[in-house]
Length: 239
Image (cartoon, rainbow, N blue to C red; front, top):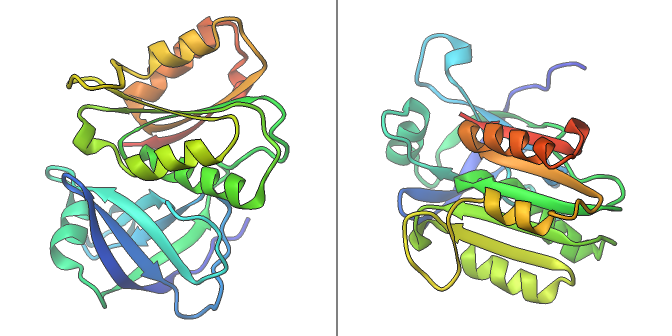
């Protein structure tokens, strides 16, 4: 497959989403409609290093196909991270960014014929937000869909009210946020106990994992220990 060309995007909006987390809205001026599949990502070429491959940073697209030429990225500021520090401190509305994409095959099955577990931490919710809005807007047939979102504190729950509203509007969509370091009215602890309980009787299922490496590594081990095949597990790794 040929590499996609580098293109220009313009920042049209920047919004605070949570502590140290911002939403960046990018418009692609050379097209009227920017086609994506929910779950894909773009790669930014940021002026932070002389070597090209040390300038590239990939981010999942948090928006969904809507017929426009604008996409949304949700990005957390990483301590010591050259890429995120540049985006948070040097980029403003009107700034131009160089990017390539959309890319990636971390996308919905053609037919959602099994229960679907969307398991994420932090900004790993981005591709799943895209997928759920796409399912909702196109009224795609589906079985149970469980969005299991792990964070430390409630202030870190990205798109919290939006996901709650979507769970009320979309049949068989279950939004299950869990906090590991704060008492609250919802679920407590890490993501693993939730899917292990829900899938204890091993219903036919697909698992999609997005977030930090330690969560994904542990989830893959646990899901296979439950008796699921490795081919039922799909991942998008951050860091």
